[in-house]
Structures are given as structure tokens and as C-alpha cells.
Image 1 (spheres, helix red, strand yellow):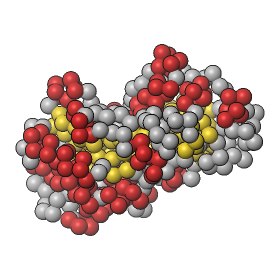
Image 2 (tube, helix red, strand yellow; image 1 turned 30 degrees about the vertical axis):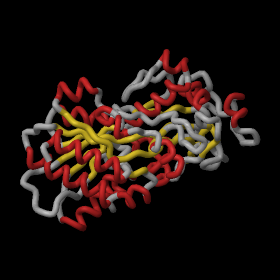
Image 3 (cartoon, helix red, strand yellow; image 1 turned 180 degrees about the vertical axis):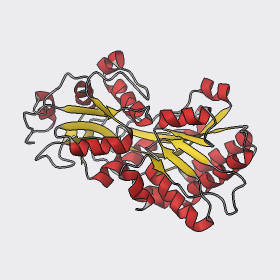
Image 4 (cartoon, helix red, strand yellow; image 1 turned 45 degrees about the vertical axis):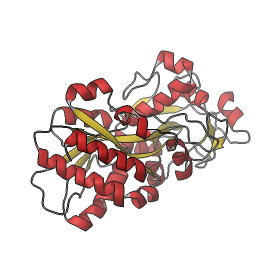
Length: 340
């Protein structure tokens, strides 16, 4: 089984093979975001071929990745929710963006094909609030005239673990629904009004595939790999858009990385006719003054390689690579943050 298949088939632990051209002076490990896991694995395969070096990455969710970093059991964490300025300062951690992409609404409805349904933010919020409970509800039908919507209960599936995907999905719902913002809010874990949980993007994908009438949210790469039903979205401009690399890139283009303190930019519900509304980024988090400086240096060599040599892999997997000019800004920041 390939590394990619291992991730998308549901393995929580991913053996990533990467890093610099000489043997490591120390073991290097990372943990966190499942959003970035498919492309990180692909980068690692390419870097292994070029260098022969390896690290281990656990796709355990953004919340667990940050906890692993703060407990000093890994060299780097990966999170789809950036750390606050105060937490970065308190813990002596720096963060930088590695990738952007799209979060997609998924469904399993008999007779309804992938890409056949359209949702808007209000309707999604009402479904996840438990206000809309049947697939043939008038609110869904109004967005989907002519669709064969069954008189079937909606089964809401959400991420059970601390997840940056959940943070960005609920951040979007909070922006488009005052009711959601007041009752639930946005974080890596929230008190879901309805539904049941599944662990990791892998678990969500499997659960949606196995649960008739279900709806959830997951990174686009998992939708493609698992052949799950997915929806189009009505964006902030009122336009219906498909989940594509182009629509994800249109959202990411609004990020002003050069002027964002600590690279803290959230890209949900961005303007533009062609913009995908539930877009997200992943940040790498590392100690500025780690106990193991050699491991930090080796990890940064890998991320340098990913910025400069991994763009095609990102595009092939429908992620938006960090632009060259932004990568240069990040690498300049490394000099002051890590003394590199």
C-alpha cells in the first residue's frame, strides 16, 4: 500500500519520508492536521527519493498536533487553526503557512450524484443546528429545483477530535449565520447541537460512505479519494461555484500573508465571483529555541524543499501551493525565528 493510500484508507499514523540530503543528527517527528496529510505524504515520497531521509508524521488532528508540540513529543505541529499571538509568545513558538485548499460539504443520498446539490451558508447552518432535519425540506429544495430529494432524515456527521477543519467550517458558519455564531461559535471542537462524531478526516469519509442520508464536511482530497458525494456552494457574491483548484485559489488570493502578524490569515467567506467559500490553510508550528536544534534544522530543510520543489504535487492534489513570493517572506522570518 502506498503512503497516499495508507492515509486515505484510514490510517491515523503516516510514515513520512523526507528531509535533508545528509543523515539526520536526530529523530524528527511531526503531528497534527489531517487537512495537509495527503500532500505532506506526497512531498515526503518525493523527498525520500531525492535524499533518502525520513521523518514520522501522525495525522491526529490539529488540536492533538498542537498538544504534541507543547508537550515536546514532536519537532513540529501542523494546524489548520493558527495559534494566537499571545500563545505563540508564551510558548516560544513560531508558525508559518504551508498550504491552502478547500473544505467540501459531503453527502450520501441515494439517487443524488456527486456535485448535484447546491448549499448556501444559511441552509448549512440550519442543518447543523438541527433546524432542517429532512432532505426534502423546503429550504434545501429551494436551492435545488428539480433534484430528487427523498423524505429521509438527515444524519449529521462531525469531527469528534480537535480539528482545524472543524475550526474553519464553524468559522464560515459563524460568518454567514448569526444564529450559529450565537449558539455554537467557532473552534477546533464545539458543542454540536445534533449529529454524531467520527475521528479524523479518514473517519468522516468512511462514515459518510457507510451512512445513508448523512452529511458532513471534509477536505477536498478526501472527497476525491473516497468517491463521496459533494455539493456546490453559493458564495459571498451569490454565485454558485464548484470545488476546484481554481475556486480554492481564488479564495487564497485574498490572503495578505506579507502583512499578517504571525501569518495569521483566515480565508473563509472571501469575496469574488469565483471564490470557494469554505477555504482553509495549514500552518506549521515549531519552537524557536528547541531542545533539539538539529531536528528543527532538519525539519526546516524539508519545508524549504516543499516550498521550492513541491508545488506540482500540491496542484496535482488540488491544494493551493504557497506562492514563491510568500515562501521567500517565510524563509526570511526563519532567520529571526530560528536563526537559520
